Image (tube, rainbow, N blue to C red; front, side):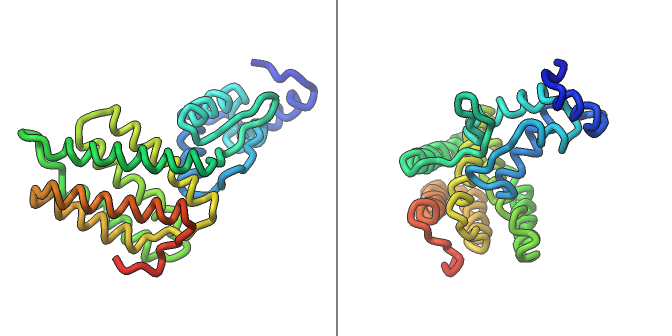
Length: 237
């Protein structure tokens, strides 16, 4: 698609050269990570031309990436306006949190189905170790800690063998990051690491009731911080 105005044609000539591997997937993944790690916060505008310059791609590619992020609820685009990071309302926040809890309880239920292989506990512990490493880095590792904390839940969903459950959990975890970002709330990493470890212990023991209770408690803390503005940093894991 050719630039439609003189300014766009001039910008296109001075844009960074196209690199191998660039495309909607790369732009989508980078922007999604920025949103999850709260590099860009709720309500932030993302002009197409700026994003195109950042990645050295066409605005057509940017629009394709935006389309995927809009479908996941991470971006919104009003009529005749540019895209911006979604800013969930209080009602939407409550729905997101309720849906996440319901879906993730289904995940735990699936993991304990008869004849289902036990999830790779060693891999889950390795992931929690990465969370601990990021947390130990202090402020410098905060964004990575947020992302890894959410990815732990996606790993559990993937262990069910259901791509649909994994997709839903991934989308809901991403939307939850928007809720915390919107209120500029502290990420309760210490509690997350301890509770993830406790959940792994329940899975290793084959203790389904304890796993369900642990997950309910863990996500309840997320909901408290998102809906009531509690940071959770002073909580004891």
